[in-house]
Length: 204
Image (cartoon, rainbow, N blue to C red):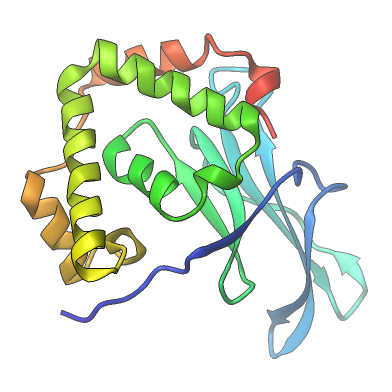
């Protein structure tokens, strides 16, 4: 099976939270020509999804010089924007489903150390909750961490920089068995806990 690398995190983009503060891509392909594109992370301020985030994208129509309508992604718990090694903007999604994989990607791709202190504290508090309230899930997460570190020390290759279809990624997952699949009860507990955190401290 071919190994396909995911772009490594070069730098996290922070503070792009509205159309006015959007990250501007100055050279973006558009129907055979080049144009500009805005991208930002929008946070829901009310309703059931309060605190959840989605990607917003908007391109400039080179024919009339006007900005097209904004396109939105679906909401998830957290989204971070970053530049990969090629200088391309990429989204990084964090949900409360399948935490083992995403949690390790957050830590082992260079993302976590570049987050603001408020975000780092936010996720550390979540780790504490996970360790105390969900010991089985925590044990699987720690096992995955151990497998990754073992692979790194042996091969000097980060298996989480490979996509889910790569052989080395599968090898790490197979070493600890199937990754954590939370029940609906666990998900409800996690959502309830995370929403007790201060939104103002955790929003970009």
